[in-house]
Image (cartoon, rainbow, N blue to C red; front, side, top):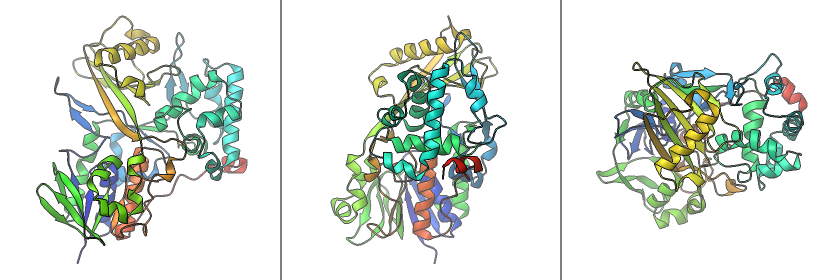
Amino acid sequence: MKRRIAILGGGLAGMAAAIRVAEAGEVPVLVETRQRLGGRATSFRDPRTGDILDNCQHVVMGCCTNLLEFYEATGVSELIEWHEATWWADPPHDPVRMAPGLLPAPAHFLGSFARMRFLDRGVKREIRRAMLAMIRLGIGGRADWSDRTFGDFLRANGQSETGIRLFWEVVVVSACNLRVDEVGADFALQVFQEGFLGHRFASAMGLATVPLEQLYDPVVARIREAGGEVRLGTSVLGIAYDGRRVGGLVTRDGMIDASAVIATVPFDRLSKLCSTPLKQADPRLRNLDELEVSPILGVHLFFDVEVMALPHMVLPGRSTHWLFNKGVDDAGRQHLHAVISGADDWMALDETEVIERVLEDLHWAVPRSRGLAPIGHRAVKEKRATFRAVPGVDRLRPSVEPGIGVSNLFLAGDWCRSGWPATMEGAVRTGYAAAAAAVGGRGVMDDLPIARGARLLGLR
C-alpha cells in the first residue's frame, strides 16, 4: 500500500518535499495555514488598490541547481527571465554594467570590474587580493571561519572601509540578510566562492516574469495527479506523538493520519506545534527557541511615467540595496520594487518615513525620478524573513539527515542545516533531502561543477 506522508507548510521546502514524495510513488498531503502556497516567497492582493504584489523580490541564481530543477519539474522555467549582467548605480555617471567577459572563471568578471568607476585603483587591488584569498582557501577552508564574521575575514585580508562599504556590504547583505560585521564568514564565503568564482553561469540572475504565486499553481495539479491532497486554509494545532512515533497532524478540522510527517514551517512556528515530550525525545527540536531572525523590507513604488529603463540596479553605499523594474502597464504606469535587506533599523519607521528614505536613494540613483513623487506605494515589512546567519549558528540548525530523533519525523526549511544561508535554494534543498529520507527516491541535485581554472588555483 502507498504510504501517506503529511507535509506541514506550503512554502518552497514543503512544495519541494511534496513533489519528491509524489515522484517516489507515495501520497503527499500538503497542509498550509494560508490560502495560498509559497510561504514568504509569494504574493498578496493589496487591499488599497487590488494589485497583486510580491512580498519581496526573490531572485534565483545560476548556482541554485535545486531551485532550478524544482521550476523545471513543475513546468514554470519559461516564466523566469535571465540576466547575466547587473547594473551598479554610479551617479553622476551612467550605471556600470557588470557582466562575464571572455575569460574563463574565476577571471570572467575582471574586465567589467575594471570599469567600476566608483572604486579607485587601490580598492580594486584590495578586492582582487581578497577574491584570490577566497579561492585559495578552498571550499573546505570555510569551516575555519565559522566562528568569526565576514568583516573579520575582510579586514584580515586587507580590505579598507571604503571597499567594504561600496562593494562587499551590498553583495553580502543582499545574499545573507546580514551586514558584513554580523554574518558568519562561512556563509558569505560560500556566496562568493560558489556564486561568483566557481562557474561563469553561477552569478546569472533569474527573475520571475509573473507574480510569485503564479509559479506555484502547477504544484497543486502535480500533487493531485499523484493521488495526494493540498489543504489550504487549514490551521494545524500540533504534531501527534504517541511517545515513540508521530502519527500525523492535529488540525482544527480533525486529525490527518500519516505514516510520516515532514515539518517545513519556520522554526518558531514548529516550536509551538511540538509538545514537551516530543521535544524531549528529539534533540533536533531543543534549540528552536535559540534561533533568531533578520528582517527584509520591500517597497513597491508606482509612477505615472517611466523613470527607470534598466531591469534592475544595485545601489552601492546606500541604505536601499536594490531597485527592480517590474515594468510599465498599458496606462503608462511604472512599477518599481526597492529592497532593503538586514532591515532592523527600518522596522520602527512608519510608512511615510520609509517612503521618504527610499525616494532619497531612488533620486540619487535614477536622475529621471528627481522631482517626481510616486502616485502609489506600499511598504512590506517581513520582520521574520530569515534566520540570523551569525557565526556558529550551524550548531543550532538541525540536520535533515535521517536517523536523528523521532524516526518518522523529518525537518526541512531554509533554517535547517543545508550548507546554504537562508535562501530559496536552501529551502528546496532541505525539502528534497527530507523527502528522500522519508520515502527514498531522488534527493538533492548536484552543484554546478567548479571551473578548471578555479580548481587549479585552489577552489575545490
